[in-house]
Length: 255
Image (tube, rainbow, N blue to C red; front, side, top):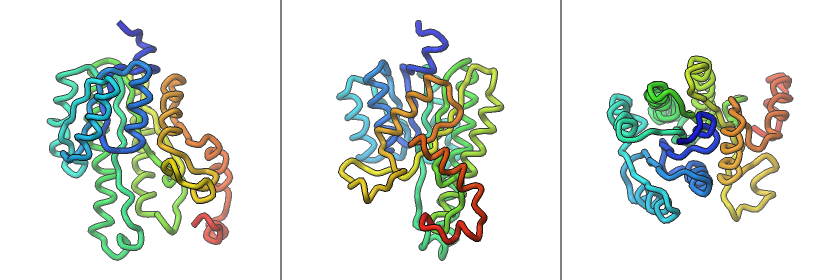
């Protein structure tokens, strides 16, 4: 049997909410290469979800899919509770979310609300369901993908950023609530995520990749970190930006 510490640092069973997420799949691949043997991919039923599951099966993991819709909080208990009933889960990775389109969403309040409902309301519901299930087990990790956009409102993505800010604060508070229960909560704040093949000058110096985020998640689990920045230099950059007056921040090219 794995030790209590091993359950955090090298999980054997994963539940991924947002089963087609590039970061989530990169994390699953990395953990399967270590010791993970069971992966649940939760998401809306689709050929893409099925392909993701088949890909992980080819890597040697017992991979199953579960129908999950972030916009249906009334169904979260039944959908996710089924996983915990059938299997012990060492790590839950909450990786779903939508970027939206800032220009369009500003003109369409319903579309803007959908971004907030997906990224925040749906995540609150799913996060609480999984946190309680992990508590019932007595151990496990809840890893939540936030974003550097949660740290400072920008003109170009404040709808998305505000939803991630809410999720970020929620996860930190949930981590406090879980302290001492045997369950570990970790917030992950990636910078702009680009795919392989993107030219470095186009990606930007503070950009990252799904594989780099996956490596940071694994390291964070081993260290039992509460907050992980990817790349790590973002922590210093954002600390400096917090000191910049709003009137000056508006003029910076990062808007």
